[in-house]
Length: 136
Image 1: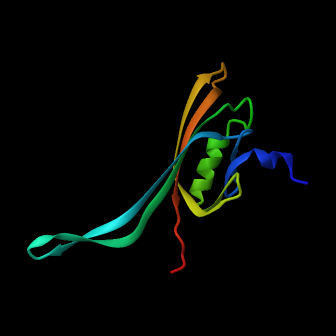
Image 2: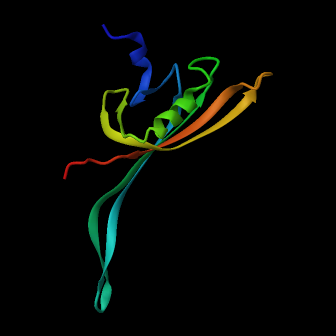
Image 3: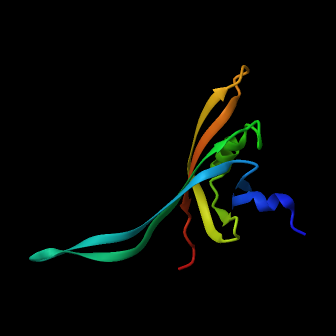
């Protein structure tokens, strides 16, 4: 029998879970590029030579309401994972395995502060880059 909490996971990056009951992203942006190098030719315009795929990046942007679910340290956990400097498996909520990705940046904005300084809302942005296969 599946665990009830698993159905609420939108995406997992290593040990970190994005979902309804924790850091919930509202925007997913993916950017892919391909490498083309100009090769000079005598008396003609340069020809472009395809060198293969370039970078593949994902940006997740969302809002955390820490007193509702997940607590105040969710963005800090993102930074701890990034500090480890290790590629992590990325799996979406539909079960699709996206291979290994690394965290290249984490940004946060805190707002709506309570009397003790704790934010009621934390907006975050995390950028991931595909690590790339080690196989030739």
